[in-house]
Image 1 (cartoon, rainbow, N blue to C red):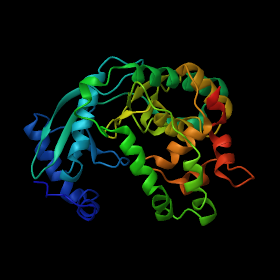
Image 2: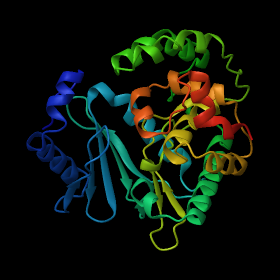
Image 3: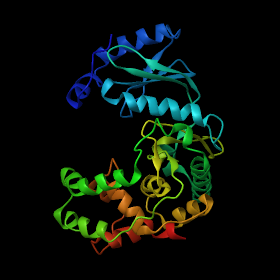
Length: 309
């Protein structure tokens, strides 16, 4: 009951349209034995996600993003009960019609950290970032080998090279001012990223929007959204950490890195910020403090200096 979606244009037409999506999701629920339960779509997320009753969640992936559905299901199956915080329990995954895939998972409890952040006192923020560092360390300590054939990019060096080649065009497309754009080639040429001797499982979007806390005791309780998971250099995960968890606060970033167990060179993290699949430097510059000196080196120190311990 859902149409074939193979292009970005088709996705932009079909996925936001509940008149198209809801009948298909209801049909899938019936096939899975979940029919008759309230169906509520979550407003956020790059893929359509629905709460089914109080305890279940269905996430759908069109044909154009089918591999993301494979990645999410694989990660959830691998992670179950192995992190300090809860991750959704995988209850089922498979194909639907016209190339669509689904992941059926349990619904986590808690309040979104992004929503709760402004209401947290300093002590609560420090506790949450400590728990976040411990959670990320536990994720990176897991053996990625069982998922090596299911998660990209396969060749991390090749991935980095491709991202370098497209970094200037990516930021121009996002309307970064030329005074910043023109610095990117020399900055990246001057950063020699270390070779990761033991590639890690990466969430890649370890950010407050994907973390949950207990609304009563303000402790970290959950981590979700594993569709963009990869295997690669652990420093790549600290892009979202610095931008969206500690949000340019040097003391909080230093605390999180201590809980994680190691630090990182600021230039390495800004390089990965520019090389990230979803990099959008104009957005980050609107959201976070920028240095008086408008250089990428100064920006690395402003956002990530505390990461080096």
